[in-house]
Length: 270
Figure 1 (tube, one colour):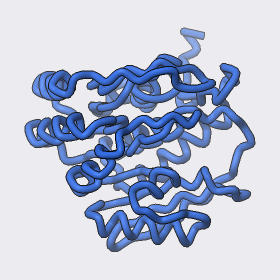
Figure 2 (cartoon, rainbow, N blue to C red):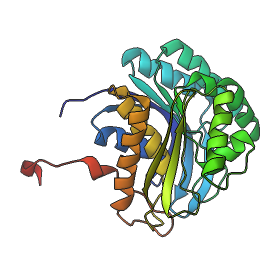
Figure 3 (tube, rainbow, N blue to C red):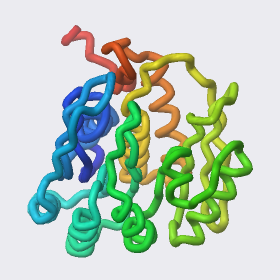
């Protein structure tokens, strides 16, 4: 298989392998592209929860980004866990230097088990300084509530929150509806001239660890290969749904999804 594109991932590490940098690399690779990484934090966790979070010094994060991208220029960037104002500032400085236009921001705030992964000051700074610099922001409902101050109880609230994020400077918004108690999962895509509701089945499983990281990275990968941002969202959602449906049922808590669902192994290697 010929490599299709190059994706720079700026995110935290997940020792359990289900989310963060580990999930991102698996996603990019499974979709036929090449992953570069800049690790922002090291988390000690498993499927039952996060034990601790250790931040990487902000200058070292900046150095990872610039040094890697100077040699292998990425076609797109996915940004995940940024847990302090200082780290966000250094990432912004780095983005100016490497000048890659296609940027997907997954505003990671709370782990699947409930642990907070970002400082309150960093959330304010992210809203003021970073949202308007990216192509797409992909919050889930709790993250959208934090970013907008809107309590989201239904699809109409999701649309209202998405519009508020546009007013804050976001170019495109995808609010993920998995946290609502509904028969179908409805994800809201919105920009100033377009609107789309992606409706998909809800699968009854605890094994959804890393779905947000995986989705934003899948979108970045499809977007880097020439798909429109809306089409990249559609394809990314399909990839994640297939990964949930075929999850390997690992762990005793919120288990990982199956990132390999898109791979067909040549008969010679079976």
